[in-house]
Length: 161
Image (cartoon, rainbow, N blue to C red):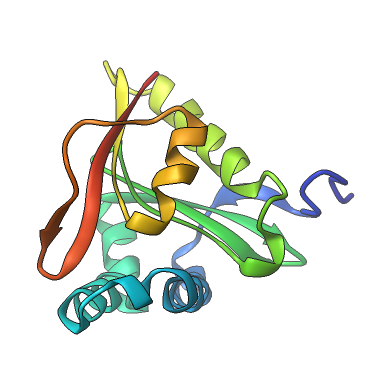
């Protein structure tokens, strides 16, 4: 049954390894439209290596990343990933689903997971310039100035659980 607020039918669930190609394609598409224009070529290349399907699958296999997807008819329309159980490394929502509460629902699911973990009291993120406002709306605060590492521009932020 579809949730009228978000338009999601299958809701939010952990991603399976065989779904990493679809997740990677979604992330790449959203990144290319909204974030890549703000990045130097080195940053874009670094990011694309990080989200390559085989790289994501390897992190899931090793247990170094937890990734949830928001699905519409078995197609991912939103992705959130945690590394080290307390760092948001990916949060992307398909353009057609922006402003429907999907990022907030994904974030709530990640927070729920953190609250069941051992002594996790905060979440961190290295927010792209495009997403700083979104993270502020979720309750994050900047903990340092914007930085650039390997061509990737980001503002370090945190959220207290």
